[in-house]
Image: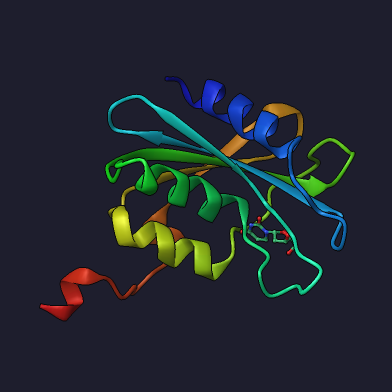
Length: 136
Ligand code: THU
């Protein structure tokens, strides 16, 4: 699976975002080591607190289907109903959730305009992170 294909799947997932409150639509596509892909979109809630980010939806879908080895994730966000015009930095909670299952070299393809993307490692986005290894 090429990064470009994963980016296309993140953009596709973004179209299913449920964002009546923020109007900010995010899509994610998580590539597993076995080649399977899990998509996620953000899902908002009138009570605000139950809102879940696109990245976590993708990770939780994968883990609940028995997948724990991940190769990469593509993330695309921007105003709902409009094309993506620039990358946005995934939230800290999603970075920590990824860290649970992914090493510091895990690549994130952050989508910019017209399907272009920047690659950043999880270690770049979450330096000096706390993870399972720190509890041993
Ligand atoms: N959101 C994500 O889906 N991923 C992130 O990493 C940051 C924020 C969503 C949550 C909410 O529905 C909207 O974007 C505005 O915060």
